[in-house]
Amino acid sequence: MRLLSRFYYGWVITLIGFIVITIIYGNKFCFGTLFGALLDEFGWSRAMVTSVFSLSILCQAFLQPFGGALVDRFGPKKMILSGAFLMAVALTIFGQAQSLFSIYLSYGILFSLAAVGAGMVVNTTMISRWFVRKRGLAAAIVGVGTGVGLAIFNPLLAYLMEAYGWRNAVTGLGIVTGLIVIVLVGLLAKDHPQDVGQYIDGMSADEAELIKKAKTDLDKSSIWHGRNWSFKEAIATREFWLLLLSYLFYLATWYGITNHAVMAMCDMGLSRMKAATLFGYTGLIGAVAGVGGAWLADMTKDRKFMLIVAYALFCLGCLIFAFNPGGYQMILLWVVIIGAAHGAALILSAVVADRFGVKSMGKIWGTITMSGLLGGAIGPILVARLYDPVYSYSAAWKLLALLSLLAVFCIVFVRRTPGRFFFLSKENNGEQK
Image (cartoon, rainbow, N blue to C red; front, top):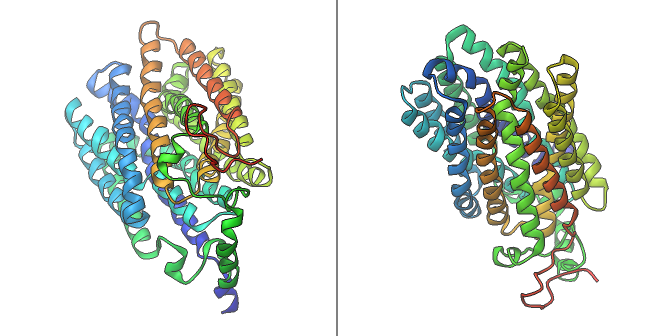
């Protein structure tokens, strides 16, 4: 009983977040596996098929700030339950779609609502309420769900499509996985440590009280117990906009890859099943790299250095694919590099929370995510547009490499303590001397 009483329930919350993200993003990132089936059935161009995914991301981008505000008001648990229900409905309708309009409606709009309700912003906001000192590790464990989702859902969907057809496969996955999330979150999820009689980071009541009393002196000098910035204060800083731009460039690259990597490998001679399985391996590698990278990041003076490594690896991976004539060994090398890059990039929410606190985390992180999703909507379209005239992805991968490099430059100039733009008020904003 003593061991049980000392166990911190935040790790249960972390596990729940990991499972939710695995399911939500597993269903989301297997769109590339569906790509070929949609081409075969409807006879559309790659740009038309890509527009479905881009519409979903675009809707999610514009809805994300509202989602951030809602999670600040209603709490993560209610948001995740709503998102899981919408995901099941969206994929059920998607599986029965007969036209581009119905696919736009189901996947483009309804699934984007589901991703806002149960996606990364809500789950990382939930984690930020439970952790400070191990926030990077906890956020990475949740974030590696995106990689595990890739690893599980891409080959699973490819198998189910071969056995039952793409319509039944999509419908079945939507219903089953939606129910799993609803039951799990409904029974076990909690919004705050106080809901189970605990304090943040598993501190004792005495420790929590000491931290509370000392916070006035620490709020301008400690990255762990720093001040909680309001949304209005945050958007007046250079760091907010640099983080926002870096995420835009990163997601433009990542979503461009997730949409087209399977078809690119098929163009190199691989079967759809083999290509989907190989792309799924990026998720497994990303899961390992995410946890390991977060552990290393938590030991550094600033977690941003792991983001620099991640974005640089994306640049390298895109260049490898740009100049790859189709050799299997080079494809495997690409899988390893992209998987490691994706895993290492999962700590961005912790970097944001380190700089701006958690009080307005939903709005701040939600707005940064909106920018990233705008990039995520544009990236796949740019890749398809560059492919369609010449039937080659070479120029597209070079463009994605450039976007990754821009993300690196943005992160390099992000300081640990946010500073205001020179033309705004020069009042003390918490900068370290």
